[in-house]
Amino acid sequence: LYMGYYLLIIGRIYAMDEDLITPIASIVAVIFLILIIVALITSIACGFMISKRFLQTVDQFTKSIKQIKNEGLSHRLVIEGNDELALLGKEFNETIDQAERSLLQQNQFVSDASHELKTPLAIIKGNLDMLLRWGKDDPEILNSSLEISSKEADRLIMLCNELLHLTREMKVKCKEAINIIPIINQIIKEFEELHPDFTFTITIDSDKKILITEEHLRQLLIILLDNAVKYSKADSKKIELKFINYELKVKDYGIGIEESKINYIFNRFYKTDESRVKNSNSFGLGLAIAKRLCDHYGFKISVISKLNEYSEFTINLKKEEENDL
Image (cartoon, rainbow, N blue to C red):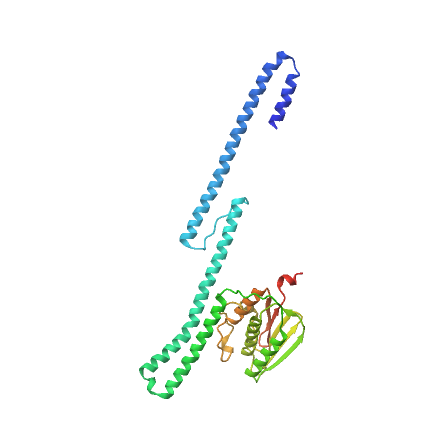
């Protein structure tokens, strides 16, 4: 802009008489020089202020990061403004949030797993100590202790298998959709043999093929049906399984789930009121495994329930991104 004015003035100067050109040109040159100096000083001052603010922000970030390093993940960067550094700080805080959540979940997982492991180990140790002291000479006590220890060892094996399933990476990829109806019928037949006092009702109104491995489908069905059997009431031993369109539903008429607890039932080691469940060997991992399997395939699992009346689990066997189409 200054150059434009300068050239305009120079043009008018050359249009004047020669006697006026020299003094006016000198004045213009001085003014132009002053403007250059002012612009230079202004640029330097602005650059200094910007760099000072930048360095202050960086220094603040550095102190906050050192505080996080020394005192834990509960601290966060203090964000001011909406510039690039502020955006970087927000991303950093979100990353720390995720890291803190993961660490808390890991600590909770280790704590819960340790708690579940202690009980069967304590029972086995108690029975072995009793046998070592005096029980081995009594055949009845010997048989009873060995039977109890064997059952608790089976519980440990089951728990370890479920823990391994939750922690290992799922590398199984399904390349071809399968007809799930024969697998449903087979699993129901197995449960009818295991639980002859239960009535299983199957409703199939779909011929959709599903992109899932047979192993994982069996696992999902066993988890949901086993839960339905476990939480059924003595006077309502009936379970319904429906496969309609892409939805697989398993419904029991049992103790139900409190509304305040529904949001937690897919968490690892979470259990509802076990005092109302007889002969429960649950570790609270089944539904967490089912949720992980569904997430792996992009399925959605949900539940509706009414306390002391029923619970119905639904798996939408269509990938969530396909549902949006």
